[in-house]
Every structure is written in C-alpha cells, then in structure tokens.
Amino acid sequence: MAPDRTGTLRRSLLTWDVAVVVVLAVVIAVASGSVDSFASQRNWGFLLLDLVPIALIALPMTLVVITGEIDLSVASTLGLVSAAAGKMWADTTLPLTLIVVLCVLLGALLGAVNGVFVTRFGLPSLAVTIGTLALYRGLAFVVLGDRAVADFPTGWTDGAVGFLPGTRIPWVVLPLLALVLVFALVLHATPVGRALYAMGNSTDAATFAGIDVARTKMWLYVVIGAVSGVAGVFWTFRYASARADNGNGLELQVVAGVLLGGVSIFGGRGGLLGVVAGVLLLGTLRNALQLDNVSADALTVVTGGLLIVSVLLPNAAAWLRSTTAQRSRRAGANPVTPASSANPA
Image 1: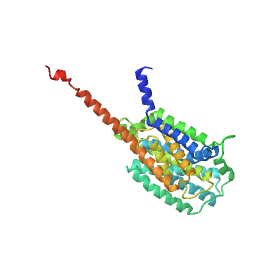
Image 2: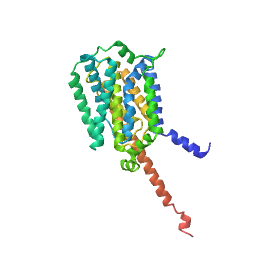
Image 3: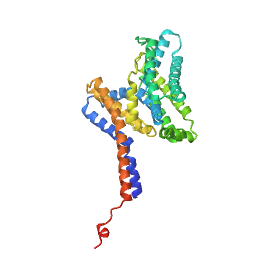
Image 4: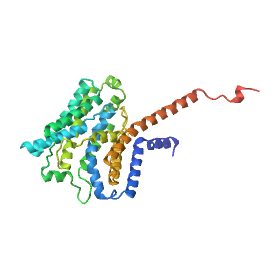
C-alpha cells in the first residue's frame, strides 16, 4: 500500500467518531458478559424505545450546535406538548389525529419563539433557552396541572410500542433511521450543510459569503421545536400518559449525546455518525447501570461526567495537535548546526 494511502487510512481511523464506536462496542461486550439480562432481546427492545425520543431530538440539535448555538428548552417543549395533548384529549372532542398535528405545530411554534429571540433580538441562545426551559415547563403545569391523562385509545398506545413482526425491534426505529439519513444528507451532502459549518466557524465570514445566517438559524429552531413536538407525542403514547413533567431533564441526555458524538460546543465541527454512536453509547451505558441496580442519582452523575469529558477531551486533543505542530515548525525553522561545521578544526 502506498505511503500516502496508508497515512490517509490511519487518519480516517484515528477520529473521534471511530473512537466512540469502538468504546460503544467495548461497553456492549463488557455489559453482555457481566450484567444479567442486558443481552436479551427484550432488554434491547425497550432500550431502543427509550432511545427514540433522545435520538430524535439529537438530530436537529446537532445542526443547531454546529452553527454555534444551542437549545436547552427541548425537554420542556416535549413536556408542554404532552400536556397540551392530554388537555385537548380530556377536555375537547377533537379527533386524536388532529390533536397530533396540532401538537407538532405547537412544538414548531415554541421553537420559533426561541428563534425570534436569538435571531431577531440577537440574544445568546444559552440564556434564551434556559429561560424558555423554565417558561415552557411552567406553562405545561398551567395547562394540565399535576394530573395525568391516561385514557388514550389502546390502538395508539400499543402501536407506539409495537415491534416489527417476528422481532423485538420497535417499528419506530424505521422512521427514525429514515430521519437520520435525511439529516445526514442535509448536513454532509448539501450546500445547506456546508453553510451550517461555515456559520459555526465564523458568522461574519458566512455573512460575507452570502449566507442568510438569521433565516437559517430561525428555521433550525423551528425544526428542532417541531421534532421535539413529535418526541412529545411519542412519549405520551409510549408511556400511555400525558403529564406536565414528561421528559423532565431529557435535555441533559440529548446534549451529552451530541457532544459525546464529537460535535464541538463552539460550533463548526462534528457529524451525524458520531452523534448516533454517542446517543447509543450514553443510552447503553445508562441501561447497563440501571440493570446493575445503580441509583438514578448516580446515573445523573455519570451523564454529567460524560458531558464534561466530551467537551474536555476534543479540546485537549486539539491543543495537543496545535502545540505539536508549532514545535515542528519551530524545529524546521531552526535546524541544529552540526558541531563539526560550527567548530572547524
């Protein structure tokens, strides 16, 4: 194999995405051999069902973070949509199909509110979405209070947790995979994706290049709101319960999965393959620890720790590469003079 091809192959394998996939394989292998019931088809079926809302929201969250922004209100959007679904089903005569459509539109509207504050008023997305995180969760309790609506038709609730014939694979995995493909194509194979990376690296440069930064970010917030609405509908039928606290704290797992997948919190770097592997790694690790009777508080500690590691390690690796490159350039600019030529006899 030619040296340049060997070097290209080595660089392709030494990426963060590949490292996450390898760690995921190790975690699965270790958990399968040490944790009872982890490797059973039944457990994997429920694990995939648990991962569906996280993976759903992680797809548009990846695009948002690549532009250098963030949305921490996604779990509260899910909760408010779930509460609205319960309210409409319990207190109105609207058909359930129409309620589902209205819930997705409500999610898009909530995302648009974030987008207006970020793009029109120029406010930091971190501050805006922390505010709407509390606002939307509070509105969910205003809409539904502390009651739970659980009398949805069994056809809908059973359908949400149905499996493909002859398997323990949830059927909802298929539309999820289709969405992964769509988001991957948009991000990695279209001018829109290249514009998102350009915005994450430099907003000013992207603007000078003719990219409508404000409009693009606005649509990203609408999309992530709509997808959070879809996740809220799925969550409601998956657990057959509409509650104001549905999805509470889910934003931590979404953001941790995205950053663990190699997306830079500062924008401009990352890809969908790493994010899918990151979400699977986080979910698999939490599932194995739950089966091993680890407490919920410890799981939160593990998730927070992985979040910090996922931010720290890529930046430490970038600093190490930069330092090594600088030393190499300095060594090239100041070659060592042979002693024999410096001190002729």
